Structure formats: C-alpha cells, structure tokens
Amino acid sequence: MGNPEDRQYYINFSTVRGGRIIEALGRTITCLSPDEPTCQLFTGHIGCGKSTELFRLKAHLEEQQFHVVYFESSQDLDMADVDISDILLSIARSVSESLEATGITLKPRYFAKLFNDIKDFLQTPIELGVEAELSVGIAKITARTKDSPQVREQLRQHLEPRTQGILNAINTEIIEPAIEKLKGRGKKGLVVIIDNLDRVDPRPVHAGRSQPEYLFIDRGSQLRRLKCHVVYTIPLALMFSNEYEALKNRLGGGVAPKVLPMVPIQSREGRDFPKGMALLRQLVLARAFPHIDPQARLELIEEVFDSTETLDRLCRISGGHIRNLLGLLYNCLQQEDPPISRSCLESVIKGYRDDLALAVEDVEWDLLLQVVQQQSVRGEKEYQTLLRSMFVYEYRDDLGRWFGVNPALAETSRFKSLTPVVQMV
Picture (cartoon, rainbow, N blue to C red):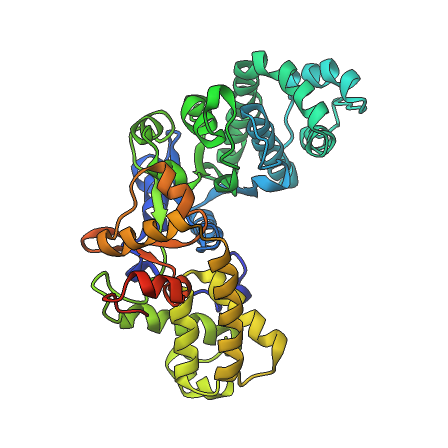
C-alpha cells in the first residue's frame, strides 16, 4: 500500500466486513492518543488479508507524519517455539534497524553489556562498539538461535531473569530517545506493527498452557509496556479462550481486539449477498485489468473466464477467503491460459474439496452440522477444530458475528447427507 503502483490492485472490503477496522486502529493513534503509548490487537483467519490491511494502516500513519516500523515476526522467530524474550529482541532489532536506516543512531549501553555476557555460549562474536549498529548485533543472535533449539533454550535461560531489564532498555535506550529525535525531525511519534504473531503454534507449553495463552495472556502485561504505539497480531483462537477478558485487560488495556472477518458471499439467512460478490469479482479483475475503471472491467470478464458464471463460481467456492480465492485462480492458470473454462475450474475445485474433506474426522462432521444450525462456534476446543482448520469461516453483519461452513466442505456428499434441508452454496 505504500507503493502507488501496487495500490491499483487493492479492493476495500470494509463496507461488507462489518466496519472500518483499520480506520479505527488508525484513529486510536492519530486522534485519541497521539502522545501516549497505545497497544492494540488485530486478528483474523490466516490468509484473510490482515497483512494487506496493516500495510494500509502503515501508509495512512506515515501520511499523518508518524514513523512506522512494520515487520513480520516470522522472519526472526520459529513460530512453533516462541518466548517473551524472543519477541522483545525481535522488536528491538526491527525498530533499531528502521531508525538506523533514517540516520538515527543510538547508544545501547545495556545491550552492549548483554551481548558481551552471552557471546561465549552462543559461540558468535558480537561486538557493539561506538560505531556498531544494534540491529546487526541482535540479527546475529536471532540467526544463531532460530535454527538451533538447544542454543535458543540456553539463551532463554539467560534472558528470562533479565526480561524486565531488556524491556526497560528497549524503552530508555531505543524508543524514548528515538521518539525525541523523530519529533525533532517533524514526526509525531513512533508506531510498531508486529505482523504474523497470529501464526504462533497452539502447542502446550508452561503448566499445560497453550503457547498463545502463555505469551499474550500470562505475559501480556509485559508486551504492553513498550512506550510507543504498538499493534500486535494475535491468534484468532484467543477470541474463544475462557480467559478472553484477561487477554483484553492485560494486553489490550481493556479494549477488545479488532477482528478481520471473511468477505460474505451470502447472508446469514443463506441468501445471495450481491455487495460481497461484486467486490470479489473486482479483486480478480483488478489483477487482469489494473488500469481500467471498475465498471469497465465487468465488460471484459470473458477475456479472463469463459463466462460470468465461472467467475462467480470461483468467488462463491472461496467463501470470501482472499488467499484461497487467489490460490484457486492460480491453480487454474497452472492448467490453462485465459479465458479459464468452467471445466478447468471444476477440476481445481474438486481437488481442493477432496483434500479438505480428507482432514475432517467423524466428530467434526457433527460439529459442522451444529455450526449450520446455530451459526456460532463455542469454546476454544471447537475453534481449534473448526476455524484453525478453515472448515468454518467467520463473518460480520449488522447483527454481529456469525459463522458459516467452508463452501467446499458444504458440497461434499458426506455433509449433504447430514444436512438435507440446508441450501448449499
């Protein structure tokens, strides 16, 4: 979104996703609390478009004269094995690297001493002299530990009792002096956007707690202490945790996480939803005809598909999940050049549907039937089974959230046998 050439491919789905979510995140920073640190939480299905929306937030905040550091935490961290010190070091590296790129140099005395303490068991020379860059030192540490669980565990044992010291050093040696220098350049403040933490693996860790619960609930109050504006992506599972209120209070400061739902292709009553379908058509057509007016693109559908019905079939089977829609389209293009035929699309859908159905266990078919009947998902266990596997999608409308079965699963003979009275997409 920061690149004008790329913006022509962007489709704004906010009118059908239940609200102006990114605008709300931005207003919290620019209007409600520009000079006081804020901590906001953002979640949704993996692949639903969160990163794109966060880039849009970054571009908006930069237009408002904030210095924004966006980074993908998965570049530094092993998502199957993450601890609080890993996240803090990743933040320190990304922020210092971004500042150094603008010519802002820092004097990280605490980190110089820390690196000296740990370089022996890391077996990695880490020099942080007067001219050295903090980001380079931390990058050496993360590179050494990301691929070595044994070294990573050694480092954690060393850093855990120093967590508060690391947090204080990030604030006093990086964030606070950076904000002062940024304001001297006419900037309004510092914003850190930490993407991909929603991909943290839900495996059990400390005392049987899942890794997301441990990081974002048990240690959430520490993640909230950074003295700048922060936006964390968090796993969608936490929205269904019994400790959701604790999450909201400890990490979100009492404010509920913002959820990016799917683009609806039908209403909760099962009727067609023309607004959602119209936007999904544009998502596809903008990639073929980026320089053409949206209305004029509709006249060119048959240059890309053999009929409008084929395009609509692609949009409907995606369930409004952006990455799945584009993945299905990509698979079609692997098989033939445009215009894509209905038979090619159906072949791709069949493969996708069969692969998805293989993963559904007997008890899960019964849970899917309950979703159809109740349009709700209750409890973290059901979430892990249904939403994380993308068997079920979340939508929003004027009445609030509702859930629908992945349209590909809804077309299987097994599901149809369970729901003879339900109208399939």
